[in-house]
Length: 135
Figure 1: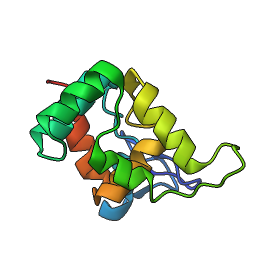
Figure 2: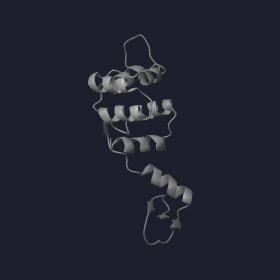
Figure 3: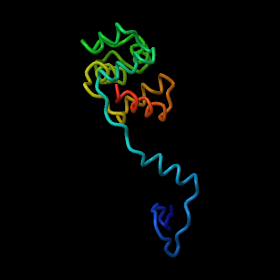
Figure 4: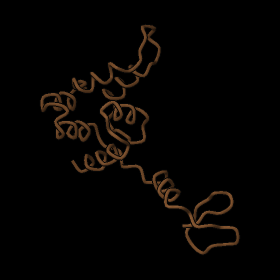
C-alpha cells in the first residue's frame, strides 16, 4: 500500500513522490474503512444479550414481545443524562431506541454509547453484531 503527497492511500505501482505507507497508517486506514456489520433485528439483539447471560430468558421474551427494557439495559440507560423538561435527552433517546427499534444498525451512535456502558470495545461490538446476525 502506498500513500501520495496528499496522504491518500492506494495499491499499485509507486509514482514519483509516493512512499510506502507505515504499518500504523495501514492499520488506521483499514480500521476506518472496515465494512460495518449488517443490521440485526430486535429479536437477534435480545437473543444475543440472553445468550451472553446479560438478560434472562423472561426478559428476552418480554423484550421481543412488548419492547420491555431488560433490567441490565435499563440500569445503563438510567446513567445517561436527563432532565425534567421533557426535551430530548440522551436517556430519552436511548429508551426510544431500545424499546422501539425493529432493527439495530451497528453504526447508530447509541450502539457505541450502550456498548461502552457495557465495557465493550468497538471491536467487541463488531464481533457481537456479526455473531448475533446469525441467530
